[in-house]
Each structure stands twice: as C-alpha cells, then as structure tokens.
Length: 352
Image 1 (cartoon, helix red, strand yellow):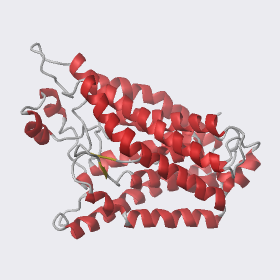
Image 2 (tube, rainbow, N blue to C red):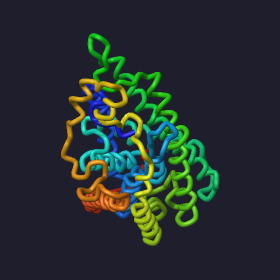
Image 3 (tube, rainbow, N blue to C red):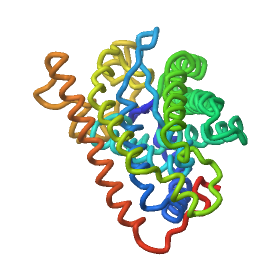
Image 4 (cartoon, helix red, strand yellow):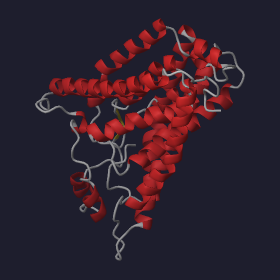
C-alpha cells in the first residue's frame, strides 16, 4: 500500500497532500496539548511497532505481497490524532531512508494509512466495544474487526487513487500517463490482497495485542478518561509494562527477516523495469517521476555488501529495522522533551 512516485499524478499528490495538512496541524496541536510526557514512550513504541510490522511481507495467491500496518492498534491505544502523527513519522522515515513509498506520494500514503485507517479503526472500535468492561473478551474481537475494516478502507482508497489515474490523465491517444490500471482492475486486485490476507493479519495482530494488554495493563484501553489525572495513572502504563512492550518490539525486529520469505512485490509497487516486463510499456509520466528520490540510504531495506545469501539479507534487514527504530526514538526523544515542559493537560486525550 506504499504508493511509489510516478503512479499518481502531481495533481493527485498535491490534493491528497493538501488534505493532510489540516490533519497534521490539528493532530500536532492535540497531541502537544493532551499527551503527557510520560506517555510519549508509548507513542514511540507504537510508531516503531508500525514501522516494523510493515516489514513483514505476506504472500498473496496472485504472486504479490501485502502487510499489516499496526495503525489500528496505535489508534485504539492512543487515539486517532496521536496515531496519525506516529504513522506519518513511520511513513516518512520509510520513504526517505528506505525508498519504501514515494516522496511526492507521501501525502497520499499518509492519507490512506495515517488518516483513513486509524480514524476508521478507532471509531469502529468505539462503536463495537461500547460500554463493555475493559477486561471483556469482546473488546479484543471489536479491535480485530476494527483493524480489518480500517485496513481495507485504506486499501480501497489506494485502489481508487490508482484507478482514477488512467481515467483522468492520459495522452491524446488514450495511453495512461501514470498508473495504468483502471478502477475495474485496481479495486478487485487490492481487495484480493487485503480482504483475504492483509486485513485478517491486521485484525489478528490488533486483537491479540489488545487481549494481552487486558491482562497486563487494562488501563491502556480506557477510551474515556475522566480527568488528566486518570489518564496519567491509567494510560501511561507502569515501567514494567513498557519494558515488556519494548522487549516484544525487539523480538519483532529479530524476526523481521521472515518478511523476506514472501516472494514478489506488493500490488501497485512495481518498478518501471517491472512494468516494462509485465505490460510491455511504461507510462511516460510514471517513468519521469519514478526517480524523484534516489537518495535512500538503504533502498528496499538492503545494506550494501549484504545482498547475497538469505542470511546476509536477513542480517541487513535486521540492521535496517534497527536504523529505522533508532531514527524514530530520536524523534520522539526530542518530542518527549517538548512535552515535559510545564503547562500540559490530559483533557481530550483520545481526540474528543
């Protein structure tokens, strides 16, 4: 679902990027005003989890791959506005340092995965969980459903963005300038990958983590904190809980090479060379914009000198995951210092 540069027209990228500006602005204000400094580590861990889980590529029957995002989980735990910030940071790091997703298409990718996905998941979870006990098993089921639906809505948005390109942007003779796939192809193809595989993966991951947190720190699941004091006590999580989450993240990083076992490329993320082989031509606009950003330090999560055997690639995959997480934690360390300044309150913590 990481749309590369060239698949969307500059006009489409501009519109979706502009749509994200008020989202980012509002999210920044709400998070700065409502997120307690002691809760910032949880947001950092959530963003790092989102970054890492997206490295776990899952094979699709049509020969492509897909992945979960962790966005639903982050939204349920910290609210949709904080999730929008955390996921956007993860997406920006992926695009800049690893060439995963386009620079011009960053606004579109953020619109799909940092706006549609967390907001849809969060409100579906709220609707389904209602006033049930924090320890109710139904909450884990509600979280799983929310993750499944949220991811598929994001995938549908990406499919529509792909499918509108040949309709709106083509040469006089009808040759697509950007994405060559019409709606009749893009929507079913994205649905296959995300309804059958990626959506269930997002739902299972979300539901299992929620169930785990119900047992070790159910305060993290409080949707309606009464006061700032309640938020600090209930939603911060004690140090032991954060350590367990951090160790879980370490294990996730060490196991990340499992994502290398899935052969193929995610649907709609083919390079111009791949498209030439698949279609016999490359849309001219796509060819022109595909090289917008060529300065990724570790393109496709590879490390120079570690491209040979599977084990060499696996080591490189772990190294790039650690680099990505290191960047995320540096960003949130600075953010945490900002939050540590006096005058912050806990009201409206979950984006009310």
